Image (cartoon, rainbow, N blue to C red; front, top):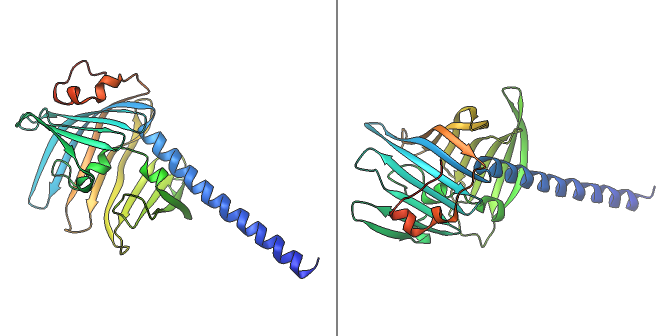
Length: 253
């Protein structure tokens, strides 16, 4: 075979392999995000905010429908009960019973702390921004507990409305997200979300305990401990309304 033909054949093969790897990485991320949020859900959890010199906990319930609607409401302790956050499409609101007021969260505040925790409003929303606004590349494969783990680098598009320079995910072959790291524009690791406990909940394997940990200051972290979950239930559209945000009624379990 002439050298030119060999070169063209190898180039075509290399391009095909690169395209396959890119598609595979995107498919892995999409599958993991869709598995995590499911078609709809209701969860009961404890939110624990830890600092080196103090710790506090709150109980909460959450409802999701598709990729664009999320409602989280706090039920305890009394001083936090009734506080709630709502996401619909790319818009977010919070409600505080102390002032009996619904406040819209502007885009500039979506990366700020949610309820004093290490999660941001954007982390809370469970939207599909990482699917639509990022390019994904499979860096390597690892093994954990006898299962294959995909390490994927996700780089935001130039026009994406995100603050991160890149994100790094470790996704197990059964679609469980083991780690999710967030890097700033200078490629410095800022915080890491880790699955601390994985077990069956709501009829499927689920990361029942997850921890968001800041790299600085050392020792700051927030855990979400899920105690109950239902997936694939019917959640009325009225659940994700501003009126329901401030005056909850007939929430599905």
